[in-house]
Image (cartoon, rainbow, N blue to C red; front, side, top):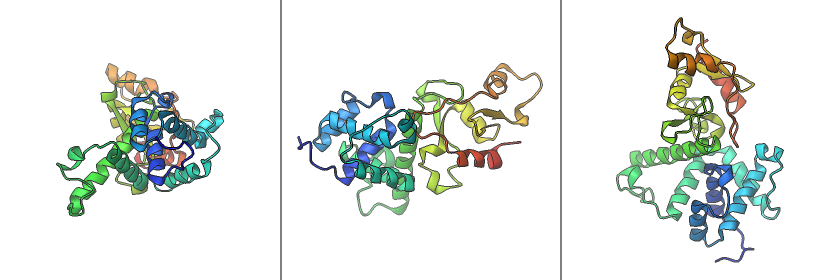
Length: 257
């Protein structure tokens, strides 16, 4: 086990930040099995890893309002990692996810048909596929955990029925593909409605329903799932609140007026 005063290197910091993003806030503690696994792999105590994650939480504007405090020493390096992620979510999502899975000894079979992304002779298309899937995994895990694995609109909390929805579509802005503030946790029903512009979110985080959805004598699912949610405020996440500029884009470019 390392000396508790030994500085964290960059790989360890981006792994800890990755873990912070993908762990529900209420599960950031020393007894979390994933924190224990990572701590063992980098030669630190679970308490040290958990506290590093709390340090990152203390940099989050949402948690600053809640007066969440981390340790003061090392905060300069923590802040650098925080800023680096926010400058380039797509790149750091890939780098940190790759570092985490390498650390815990996870193979890339599920991503590339037994081709390791560390091999220099991997075909360009295979490398691209691996990168996309690692970034998608980071985005999905981060968004769903931030909403405590429930739909922001209907509160459905069946994990297999949830999607991490992009506010600005994946195809439109590469720089926002892994940005969790460009995401919403939505059930498959509301994910499709949001993607097709039948619903949107206003500047007060309230649901707006398109005229296209307002039909006479709608069936029950239509009525309950769309018409009756209009004007309700969405469930807000524990971190990475939806970006106002992204929501404005959705209202202007995707929503069916």
